[in-house]
View 1 (cartoon, rainbow, N blue to C red):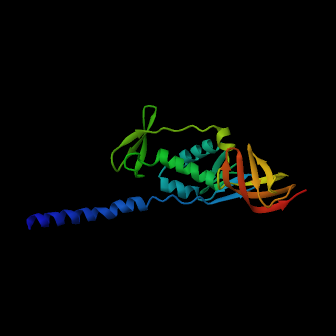
View 2: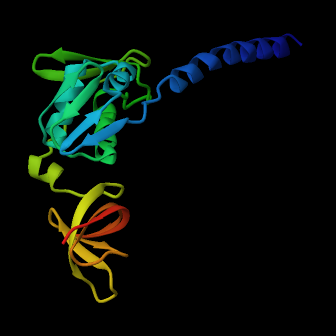
View 3: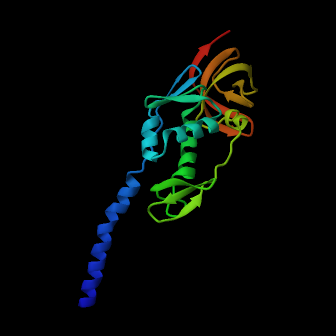
Length: 211
C-alpha cells in the first residue's frame, strides 16, 4: 500500500510540472508577417511584434534579413521598410531561418536561449537544458537571394508569347513563367503555384492589359 501511495504521489508531482512545459511551447508562436507592398517598397508592419517574440535585438534581426534578402531597409516605428519588392513567403522563410539559427536550442528544441560571445565565436546558450553551441550562419549571396522565385510569390509578368497550349508565357528573373488565361501583350500579377527547374507556373491574381 505504501508503495502505491508513493507511486501516486510521484505521478501527481509529475502532472504538476506539465502545465509549465506546455506553456513554454504555447507562448512561442511567431506572428504571421503582416506585409504591404507600395510599388517597389515592401513594408513589414508587425516587425517589432515578431522581434519581441524572438527576444532578440531588433537591429540584429534586421541586419540578418537585409543580408539574406539582399536589399537595404530600415526600422520605422514598429515596422520595417525594405527597399525592394519582397514576397511574404520570402520574409517568412528568412525569419524561420533566423529562428532556427539564433533562437531554438538544438538539444531540447526550446526557444529559451540567449546569445553570448566567447572570443570571436557567437554561442547560443539554453536556459532550459543548459546546452550551448556555436552559431553557424549560412551565407547567402545577393544574387542567389534576389534572383530566385519560390512557390507562393506574387510577381508581375509581361506576356510576350503564347505557348502551344494557348497559355501566356513571360519571363521573370531567369525563369520562364507560364500563366494560363492570358494573352500576348498583357501585363499580369500572378501567384507562382509550381516551379520546375527554370520554368514556373502561375495563376492570375490581377490583370492590367497594356498594348
